[in-house]
Image (cartoon, rainbow, N blue to C red; front, side, top):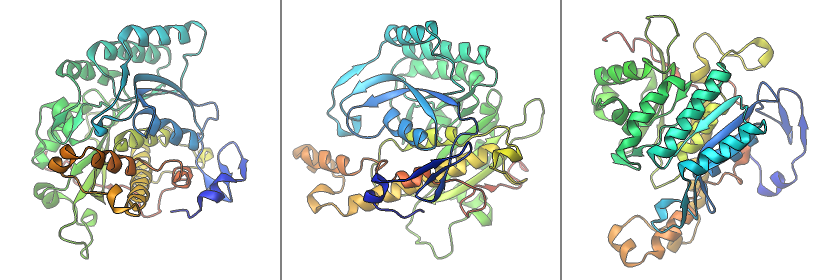
Amino acid sequence: MIAGSIDDEATMAIQSTPETTQVNGTTCDSPVDENDRILSIQSHVAYGYVGGKAAVFPLQCIGYDVDVVNTVNFSNHTGYERFGGTRASAEELSSILKMMDEIGLLSPHRLLTGYIPNAAALEVVKELAQKLKSRNPHLIYLMDPVLGDSGKLYVSQDVIPIYKVMFSFATIITPNWFEVETLTGVPLLSLSALHNALSILHKHVQHVIISSIPLQPWLSKVLPETMQPPASADNQQAYLLCISSSRTIGTSSHSTVHARLVPLIAGYFSGVGDLFSALALGHFNPSPTPSDNKPHSATQTPLSFAAAAALHKTHSILEFTNAFAARLPPEDRTTTDDELDAAEPVRKLKRMRGRELRLVQGQHILREEWREGQGKDLQFWDGFWDSF
């Protein structure tokens, strides 16, 4: 991780080349094509960092121009329990996109979609994705199917079949374990179930990242030894597994699977999936060449490279945020207690505020140039499909 104070960051000396940016002597990521432009369609909050607020700044930090369409405009994220604002209607979204198209402002190289509030709005986004893909077959579309987490849906059931139709337009999807189960109907309780779920998703999507799966006993038993937690690890420490799976189009062969464990950081943090998906899109280069100065070895795929960068930077931002929260006064870092929170709502408000992602203060993490071989790569899961 790159060290640097906030004062240093405020007075950065920036020098650019077509491939990289120098920030105080540190080489930072930039898009392969300096004209690469991303259209981001997801939620917006006035305060804090979720949805577009967790995605746009990180993408700008690594050199992308980002056009933004907000699907909701809220005061703050819903984890605070109290929030105000509005959800964009299908008509409002359609009007914005139609005008952008009419005046020639709707030609992104990449498309990123996150939280969409309802089926009608999602239909508008589906039609847009189809239109953009038909105009530019090389469009890189990362779809984060934001449905829910920890066994709980955030959205109504009627969006699920629409997301399934949208798979055929997506280059990459980034569901968490609960969203995989919801979209495939396969509970992830065994390696064979994981095989089945990935096979279902790969019928329509070339690249799949399962952003997080809790390291449960069944998964620990089948995980290669090289991917297991270190022997010195605390037995009480929980872990999450990130999996990337890329299938070669036009072949009947199985996908190439990579994975990596990271320690679970205890606490409620919002916007983590939004940040991860943005970074995965930003670091994805489907056709690397030597001139890109971003080599992938024979053991890595463009997807595993992007997933590794996104996982490392997201986890580092979480560590940075958690360290900040731990330094707050005791009254601002209380533990979750539903009964006490209900009796004294300000407890939860202070806790949520202290756990907002420290993106601006941690931008040195976001800007860090990502290269393979730094000890944070996803590892090739040799034999993953052997028992399928």
